[in-house]
Length: 137
Image 1 (cartoon, one colour):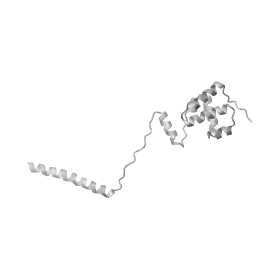
Image 2 (cartoon, helix red, strand yellow):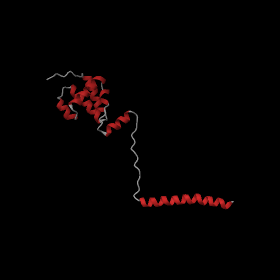
Image 3 (spheres, helix red, strand yellow):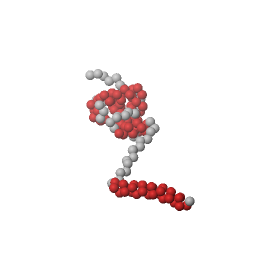
Image 4 (cartoon, one colour):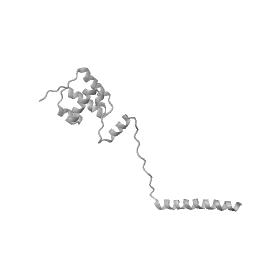
C-alpha cells in the first residue's frame, strides 16, 4: 500500500476548517471537507461515504488544492446540474433569465372572429375616411 505524500500542517488544516465552516455553497464545503480529511489520513472509502465524491474526484480536488490553495476547491462546474450553470453564470457576472412562455388562448374561434371584426373596421375606416373626404369637396 502506497504511503500518502499529501500532508498539511496544523495552520493549513485550520484554514481549511474555517473555510468549510464559513462556506455557504454545499459543493465547495464538501470539497474543503474531503481535502481536509484526506490530509488527516482518513481512508478514501470513508471520505467517499461522507462526501459522495469518487476516488478520481477526490484526487482531482487534492491536486487542485495543492496547486491553488483554497481557490483550487472553490469553483467547479458539473454539467449535469442546473444549479452549476446558474453558479457559473453568476461567477461570470451574468444573470439567468427564464424564457417567456407565449400566451395561447383557449378560444381560437372567438379570436378569429375578433380579428375579422378588426379587419372589417380597419378597411371600413380607410374607405369611410376616403368617402368622407370626397363629400367635403
